[in-house]
Image 1 (cartoon, rainbow, N blue to C red):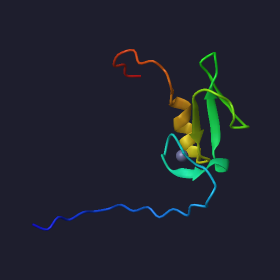
Image 2 (cartoon, rainbow, N blue to C red; image 1 turned 180 degrees about the vertical axis):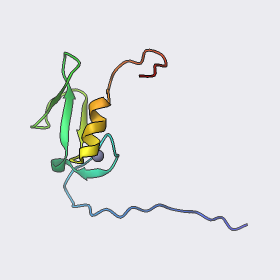
Image 3 (tube, helix red, strand yellow; image 1 turned 120 degrees about the vertical axis):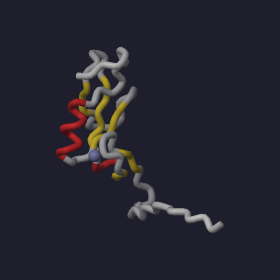
Image 4 (cartoon, helix red, strand yellow; image 1 turned 60 degrees about the vertical axis):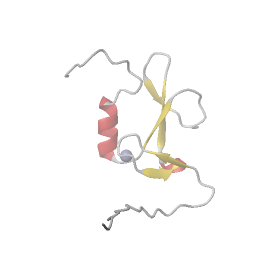
Length: 86
Ligand SMILES: [Zn+2]
């Protein structure tokens, strides 16, 4: 039996030395500089980490407007209280 293996090979133009990060919404990879980093504040809010050096949990978001919209509803780190439909 011949096994058909489908390999989804994504050929990304990776520049050496440039760290890549993944957009938390669309899960596409971008150079770190092209993404906006959000960090969780002590008040459980999100703030933009412009320097990308703040400690703690952070999320990267690309510049797609659709991702920004989804990210507004995305609650990273929020403890789940059972199955709730909003
Ligand atoms: Zn995105």
